[in-house]
Amino acid sequence: MDDKRKANRAKVSLKATWEGVRAILEGEIIDLSKTGCFILTNDKVTPGELIRLEIEQPRSGYLSLWAEVIYQMPEIGFGVHFTSSEESEMKRLEWLVKAELFREREK
Image 1 (tube, rainbow, N blue to C red):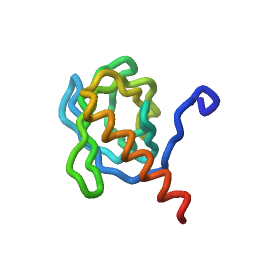
Image 2: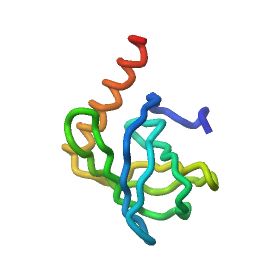
Image 3: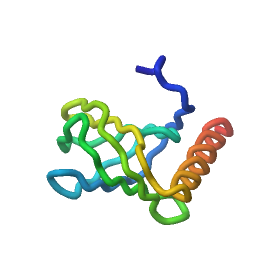
Image 4: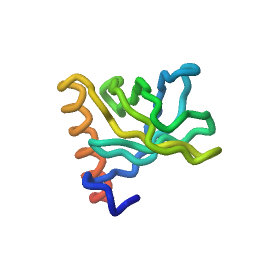
């Protein structure tokens, strides 16, 4: 799957809450780019499911995005592709990814 990715991905640890078909659930984002992310959780989702995702940013509140579940790894988590969201939220997402990538390089 990595060879298909066009966006730089940052290793992160961000709290996430999402609303899907079944319920409102929580997990941890461990991989983030401006096009998608991987959420660590043992909760079940279905590939193709649309979710409303809220990402807790380190210092500036929550980022709200719409996403489509691309794949699920049972008992581990799932990957999403960000779909339509407000332009201001997408700009905040780009800033967050750039900041996390910069932080990784500084280590």
